[in-house]
Image (tube, rainbow, N blue to C red; front, side, top):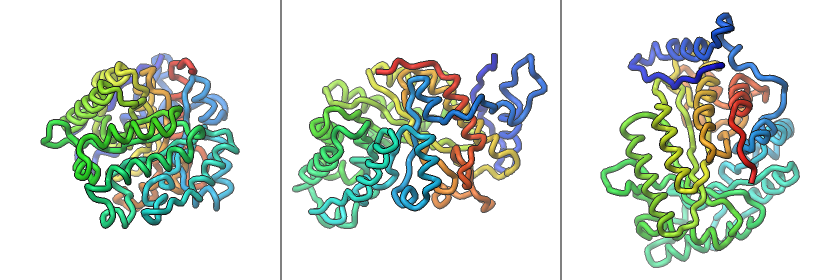
Length: 384
């Protein structure tokens, strides 16, 4: 049996990090009876069954984020997306900036097309995001103040959620409200906090639940994975937020963990991460991996980087899928051709980045194998 190990925290400098990580991922997890196997052999999977079916076999959902412009202009990509994914997440089309050209008008044309695409291909639709401190329209700052903020927020949530009521799996109701800071609750200083105070989060969830009682309502956040002091503080503050919401009867149903994971020597502490997941689950909450990809910005050594990236996927997913409350895995994109990281976190050497399951030519690569393997080995869930 292959024994799982956590990533190792290292103090290596950036120049040597790539070699060290490559050795780590290429040489571990070897079965004693097959010591000759090295490198890509450990990512071997049986058959060519798509990720959506491998996940479904274990009671899991696999999906990815995509953009309207790409799905409508690249037929081959749209076909591959429908083949691999059981859930579609509009990457930008349901954010305020995209939906609200003016304070009085909503534009659902692009998101409606994506909803219809999901329905045609038997995919679930997921909403991202109702409340966030970013991606607000230009008119927001000039129009919204303390006198009308509650009305603007609740009207937006009511209009958007009711528009898709009965046709959406889940909503990221509030996104990234916590940031480790010197305040007791860790609430990020957002426009919503400034205008409405701490109750804006509860207001958002209650409004969304009234607009669509069937949708799964999610609190979504980042930087919850690694073993360091800042992450430890954030985990505690996120747990306190969820506990407070639950104690007040607020309809929050799940935690979304974004999981933009770095291909770097920093590591996961398996016990601490599992304990955190169990604490979330003990609140009667589901857990979704909502935006996974692997950042290689600081990975200077290009050799074997596909194996390094695949190793991150396999390590992380193997760990989190041990928790029964984790029922969904979403990658933030499907193909390297369309990853947001090209602009937001490019490699230092200028080489094209490869953070997703399919390469730029829409072919499966080692990251796909790693995800497939993690699904194949995951404990089965009870489908409800």
